[in-house]
Image 1 (cartoon, rainbow, N blue to C red):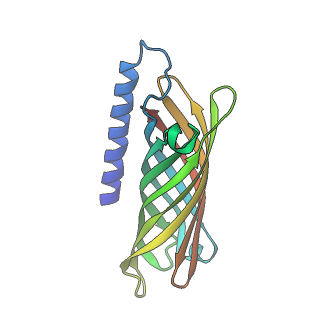
Image 2 (image 1 turned 180 degrees about the horizontal axis):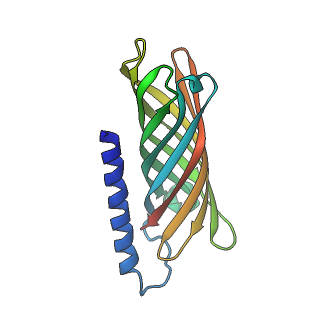
Length: 195
């Protein structure tokens, strides 16, 4: 319940901020990024692969993210940057072992932006961070677990008007745990605003 409220608050704030930027930019022409900063929201849908699918069917949630393009003086290109992501996800249990299940994560990473014709872009990205699985249910699985998480994604982006970018991304998460590895594969869909 708490995760749903937090996700709802993030979504409402994102919509309000986006509408505010859209209104203020109605009479302006499309402009380039001035300080190399992007912030946005993704809806995230992941599916467990392998043995972990005995516990969970799918996850659904949201993440907020910030991308920062490093200055050309540092990396000799305007297309390389760093990112930070914070996500909240509801995990849908298959009912065999768990009653409630959620996961939250924070990660940082790096990306490279490739510009394509007609305002399309591709952004491969690598992240590392921490994930927190919160469980409640059968046997002794009533706990909160923190694990290291590696994430690989590749955004297909469309540079819209008024510095707004829409993105669609396949994503793969690799989480080493004590007795093996948890794999998630899924999709992200969202938008961001370029400052």
